[in-house]
Image (cartoon, rainbow, N blue to C red; front, top):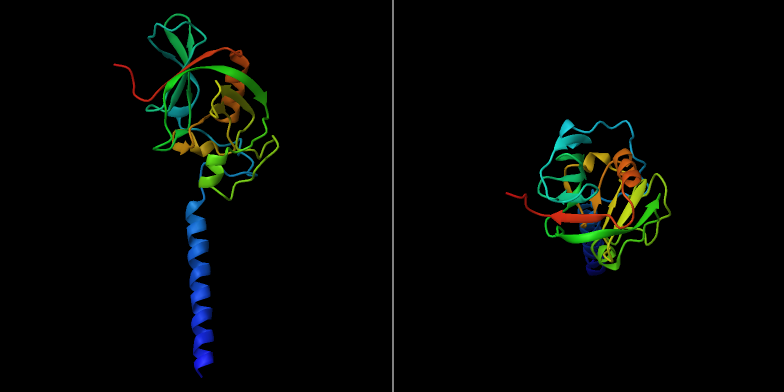
Length: 197
């Protein structure tokens, strides 16, 4: 009888462990990266996040990119006190940063190799994923300086306007393709966390 009780107890402990492990795994899934999911191109962005020409005062020359993580907008400076404004997804709390960089590389349908730090936080991610419609980097990527950060597309358009990434800036694929075609390698990129006064 003692052996039966011991066996039942062991089975219950194993089931509890299995359930708690699967529950914590489900909680650790990051909504921001879903490899293999193909973007819904019919998804309609809220007007706040749609690409539009806006008035924008700055001393920066036309062609400069200014990213405001607080506003969740990317501005491509145009002549005459204007800018093309794109809605973006930005880094989650703790993954936001600021700085002055340049675009050092550009790729169409880029491959994705999550950095070791990201794999440590999200062990379910693939170690490599070829470029294509199901790739979380989307249709285009512009690499920022010598960092691991990029301005890129997404296979999750509903994440635009949210704090979701590990520090990169994501746009819907149509917008990132538009931006990609407008800016050359060497473009100055200013990342700000707080709006200017």
